[in-house]
Image (cartoon, one colour):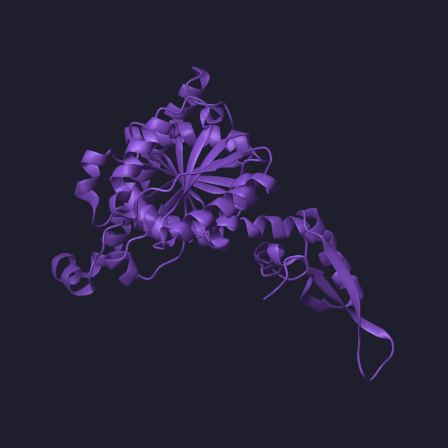
Length: 373
């Protein structure tokens, strides 16, 4: 068993590369040692061991797996799955306007540029059917139809943005610059493709009320994005009443009682520049009651020691009545936001073993921040 006070070897690099990595690890709060590595064929040190504390291993691995070259700026961006953008997918509904309002507040809070994205689906023409009906002009007609659909979507997006600018002048929406993106394709596929090619700092998406979500159990755009997206997603229910981001002071975080919890909290703290808030930790794993309490208390102590700007406490509901106890605790404790670490799952798991994020989306009318791990 590894002694937590010992140093373990993370990697072996050339001295210059090792020193560069050491600087980056220390900038993330780690204690690092360098030791010369001498080959049996040469008495001269040709490389150095980069050694860290065992408790820092999850974050250190995330850093070195972020890319080669060890550019601090590039690593910070890749570690958080971020660029300088905040993506807000819209369908021009009232819920979308609410998502824009909250999204702009979040963008201003974390210092990124909001991008309003809309996707449209162009008509599909099969060669056989179109040729029978339209003859030789089928391809031309298909192109014209597709162009008309895009033009219509472009006009709607332009009108939506004009309304946003008007609301900004009236002081209803934060007055910050924003961009737009109009993409062809199914909504969830367009969002996931955008996030893959240009990873934003955050995706802010509207959701419907709990009474209407039952109609969307199959094919929900937000649920699909939550299950597949590898950047943080902030969901905004249609009854959300967040006046100021600073008003979000009590968070409830579901914990798996593993290293992913540490990575989730670290990502949360970095994203919001170590906020002052109260975070209630809730275990969700099926373990013996005593062992669960011991682990969640140890995790709570670790977070309180390492993130002094925030205060952490625990709540251990009875797993047999987990859903009801959570539903009672949220209003009783005054919880403003749910934090959910989310692992990537395959299609089979999504259907038969939905994630906590997926369940929470349909069971509760609560704003939720889902952080991929």
